[in-house]
Image (cartoon, rainbow, N blue to C red; front, side, top):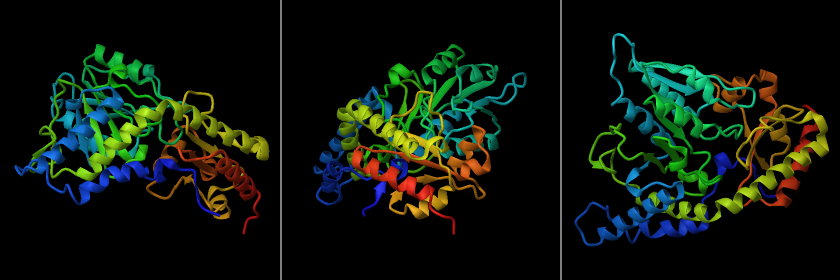
Length: 381
């Protein structure tokens, strides 16, 4: 039996068309785009073509997009690069203040910790039992010194969609910047930065069947940022270092594919997700608990609390690739998010994350349900 990938948040393979688009830029077109050689112009054009494709996917202008080494760097640049311009300290107001939801990805949380080291007052905003952080919870914490807010578009563990647009309006009424981590969302749901009204937004290529180690940051026209990497200036002065040309081209190819397929994929993914939930409930009944089931979420992501320990289920259903919480110190993101919504350590130990993908079939879902149901009844060693 072949492996069934049910954790596409971490195991997403590159699409064949993306690999094909990248191939010439490892060999034939290996020039750097800034070189004066005539062959370098083809490389430069390929990068700008990819920039247009990614920009079109999220509804921004190409010059508002900065290519990075991944979603982590994009988040760091959006937060720390903006902080360089917003670090004024008024003795009356105190240090600059930033609000961050308590279920953000580590890339955002760790950047927030760095702000704290730089003298910022960092405050975490709690979520509810469904992993939803309300705009009201943010607004009631606004201060005169609040200069930045960070809220993800969808949670990477639970799939819960966050009220980014509502929060953006409230932030802008107070002159506060809003950074959004959309790495889990772009390519799975339609994302338009004009509608969201965010100031900066991070995205990642490998979340949409592109290459790992490639990301981008949307930077709203007129927003001031400073680079966080130093060296030979690239990407409109916001990033140093030679461009990863094959990766950027692959990102552009993946973005074009996602733009064509996202609407149809949404319906298919949602149907597969529900098929999985229904199948588990049919086999295991009320022993199965679906986290954040009754709030709006991504069409492909679900975290399930099983009737047995997740590690034992993983061992018994060894042909399945699913996400598990790792509670050892320091705890991983899945553990941290589940703790934030009130789960006990025993409940966290029984949780698995499933995130179906474009290549997942109904037959694979049915096989996965059978394997999980059998594994849940598998005797303990």
